[in-house]
Image (cartoon, rainbow, N blue to C red; front, side, top):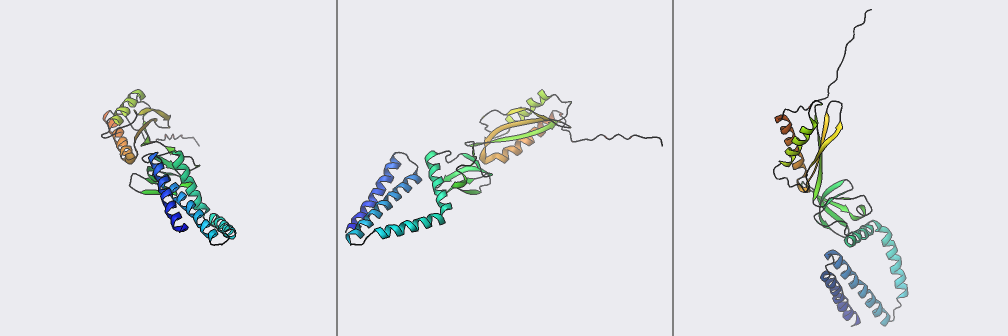
Length: 245
């Protein structure tokens, strides 16, 4: 009877805890985890009470459970580390669903956050599953819903850089469908051996990164060609000298 009543109470209290956390707008995953944990803890106490009423000493049982828990913890330390990291992510919320995350050499939109892993989706629709222990404590880039695009184009040294900057800026701003969160930044990036390198930086939605990168390169090429701005290629000058023998 104690076991039956205790099971019902443990289950209801677990649901109550979960409901209260959801009411307080706590993450659903965390709410369910805490509710299930409360259910199991209360049920464990009920089982100990039942064993005591039956005259069974629970001290050896506690020692066995402790030893088994230690062994299981050592065997599953990688998995437990993922759960601990997931718990930290849900509590601290360094990123949310829809953000653009770059971590461990992978970049994509955050599709979902679980206790054991985080799922990213890249522009090609590929779902990338990253264990949470590889997310927490690592250098992480979060650019929200956008991603920075960087490119450069070389022009001849006899070109007017002021004119070229205006042309490149106008070409980027004229890309169809580009809803940049900020105006493009264009300027002289470097002085190369054969050209003045004009650099451009602008942001675009992550799910269309390569689409806008390729469109920007094409728009810049067409604009430079239309305005007769030379795009040089590497050249070498060779001088031959003749000596009298």
